[in-house]
Length: 353
Image (cartoon, rainbow, N blue to C red; front, side, top):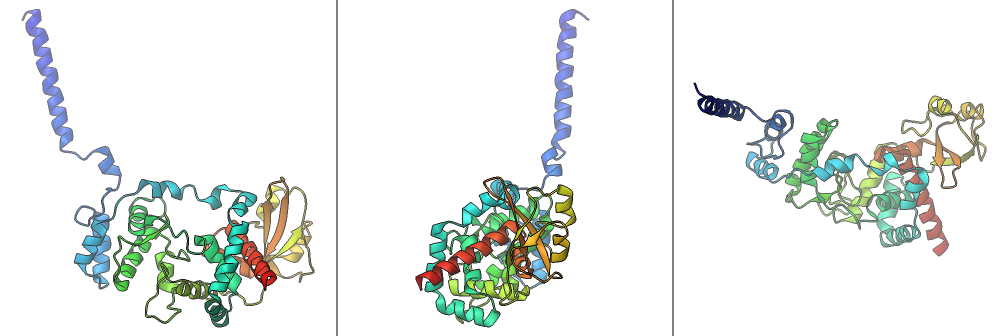
C-alpha cells in the first residue's frame, strides 16, 4: 500500500467512525432531555402534566378543557429567577421598611379606608380584624390593588410545579387548585395574572388560600379577588380569623437590650422566628432585654432584633397576633411592615377625623 492509499484509507475510516458515533447518539435522548423536565406543558408531550390532568379528570374536571389549558402554559425562566431573590431573604429591616412605609402608601391607605368604610366595618364586626390591619395587608401586597402582578398565573405555576428544584410538589398543588378555580369561576385561565409565585388579586392569595379563605363578601354570587375590593376585604379578614387573630390584643411591644447581641444568644432565644411565641418576658429579662412597658413575666413573645440605617439594632417583642401576620407571609420583616403601616394609617386617619 503506498502512502496516498494509506492516507485516503485513514480519512475514510475516520469518517465512517464519526458517522457510526453520530447515528448511535441520534437514537439516544440528549443529556438535557434525560435530566431536565420538558419545557412545554401539553399533556400529550409532558408526562408530569399528563399525570396532573388525569388526577383532575378523576376529580370531575373535563379532560378537553384541561388539555387546552395546560397546552397554553409557557415555561418562564424569570419566574424561577425571581424565586431566588425575594426581598424578605436579602434586605435588612431598614431597607425593607423603606419600601412600604412611605407617606404616599400611608395616605392612600387612609383613602382606601374611607372608600370602603362600610365593608371594613362589617369585616371587623364579623371577623374581629381591625380595618387598618386589613388595609395594611392589601397595601403591602398590591398597593391597594394597583399592582396585582403581570405574570400569567398559569405560566408561573406550571413553571414552578414542574421545574422548581425544591418546591415542585407544593406548586403542583397550587397549579391544580388554580385550574379548578378557573374552571369553577368560568374564567379563561390564560387571562388571569398575578405574582411570579402565582399569588392573585388584591390580597395576593395563592390558589389553595383562595379555595380555603376567599369569601363572597358583597353577596353577588362570586368570590372575585381580582376586581372586587369588597370580596378582598372580607377574605383577608376571614384568613386572619381562621388563623386565630385575637381581637383587641397587641401585636408587638418596643423593648431595649444590649448594643450587640451574641449570635449564640440570638439563636438560643429564637430571635426573628415565625413560629408561635414561646420565649417568656422573664427569660428575655434574664439576658438584659426589657419591654418598654410593664408586661406579665410569663407572657410568651417572639423576640425581634431589627437593624436600622444608623447601624444600631433595636428590639421588639411580638405577641400572638404578630405570629398570625406571619401566617400570611412567613417573614418577620413582612409582619413588622404590616404592623407599622397599620399603625401609621390608623394614626393619620384619626388625625384627619
